[in-house]
Structure formats: structure tokens, C-alpha cells
Image 1 (cartoon, rainbow, N blue to C red):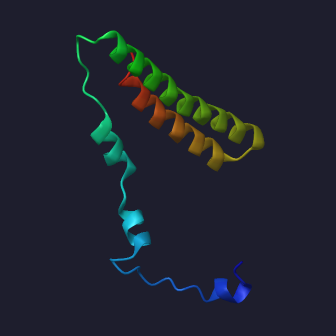
Image 2: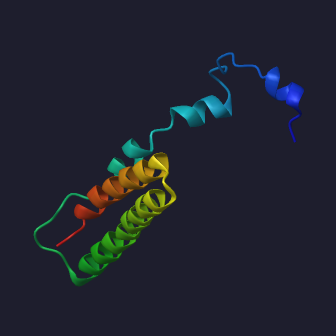
Length: 101
């Protein structure tokens, strides 16, 4: 656990390029998701259709959690939480849309 002095004396200098944390901070989840997002095909087999449906449903859960977070933020009077929920809802809704019918 960090002490008060540790927090006050925290080193805010840039991370060295070779550190694992610096590499993690450069990670772009949006780009990684786009790399695995399939192109829409007209002729889908039964297994492809089932897979697309499951993917759409799973991503739809992320959208639903975002909507719930947005509602909770409104109930608690926290604009920050409500905005985070709205952002998550839009993000996952857009992703789920690609796998819809």
C-alpha cells in the first residue's frame, strides 16, 4: 500500500520506451477489434449464422450494461457515470450492429 509520502513524491516522468507499461499504454483496443471483425457476406451457412447471432447477442450485452450504467448515473445524480454509460452503450451498440441481420 502506498503511503502519503509515496503519493506526494510520485515520479511523473515519461515511461521508458522498453517498459511493459509503456507498451500497454500504446495498445489500441479499437484497432485490435477491427482486425477480427468479419466482413459481411451474403451467403452464410447455418454455423456462420449461429456464430453471428451469438456475437451480436454478446456485444448487445455490453450495450445493455452501458444503458444500465447510464440509468444508474442519472438516478445517482452523477453526470460522469451517466456519460460513461452512454459512451459504452453507443460503442458496443455500433459493434453489435455489424453482426445483426
